[in-house]
Length: 343
Ligand code: KG4
Ligand code: ZN
Image 1 (cartoon, rainbow, N blue to C red):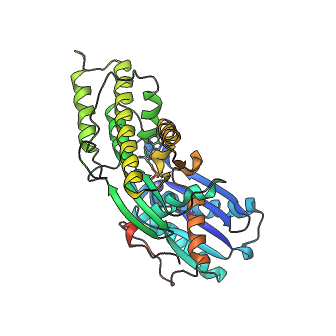
Image 2: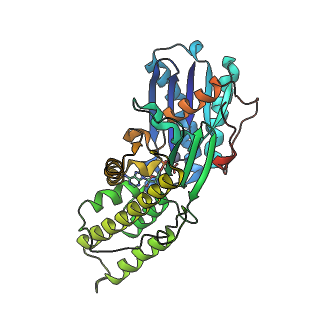
Image 3: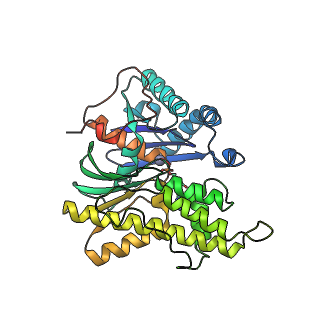
């Protein structure tokens, strides 16, 4: 089965063609980062308008790159949520219309399920059941994955998502949007251990997270360092970035360890935008080596939003005979543990 996948849930237009026999045939992405940068964050209406501009040219390009005629597409998958409603509607309308015109089924995909399954685009794939740590701009969740669509949330953030905390602290440090990768780059120049920020909720049982206090701790440290002229020495900013990143990573690693111990499982999937963080990947790799786990993550470009993960996830559901009716599905909120399992 050959599936066109379309991702438009936030600030990236991602399109891909996935073939269940041959794998990923083509994928391309347009990032809106430059457009939103001057506002310091995503402007939803601008995001929707840009998806409208980019969706069809990208689809044409990806079909050309896949070197397959339109008639060879067996189904169309699109991100139906969670995400920005206007942005979702653009991808949904384009996908649903193309599927109707081509006479093939369409399926609305859950964005976090697509992230969760993204490591399956790689040669080394996890085998069910496993534990997944989903860390993106909107979600931080530990999920017990028994099969496609069979998800039990073991723990999640009670306030800010890890990516959101990265973005907010980056903003305080005067870094641009999106803050996560820029904070990570700054942290590389920081002194380890100068700032010992808390590892929230690790001193009590359970698998939930809370990152908003950590963000406040970083803000307080920053305030304390303000010089007479109101500025802060660049090295201090780097040290704070290092301390903050270290605290987030330690917290995530401690909770992953707990989740694997409490479920008795040894495979861990790491997915979502923050899984692109090199320090986090290295820490989990070391931990896995020491404890006999296996860690799976997507290649760096498929950690953040992309069309390939949507084409893959949609393909699994279409192969199982699941598809939607003629309606365009778009849900700003959509809990992952309410999905229909794939038999
Ligand atoms: O999955 P994603 O692309 O979009 C959502 O579904 O939210 O994740 C975006 C988030 C942003 O908060 C971004 O700052 C964060 O992932 N991120 C990172 C890194 N790359 C992206 N955070 C820390 N380190 C990175 N290298
Ligand atoms: Zn995402």
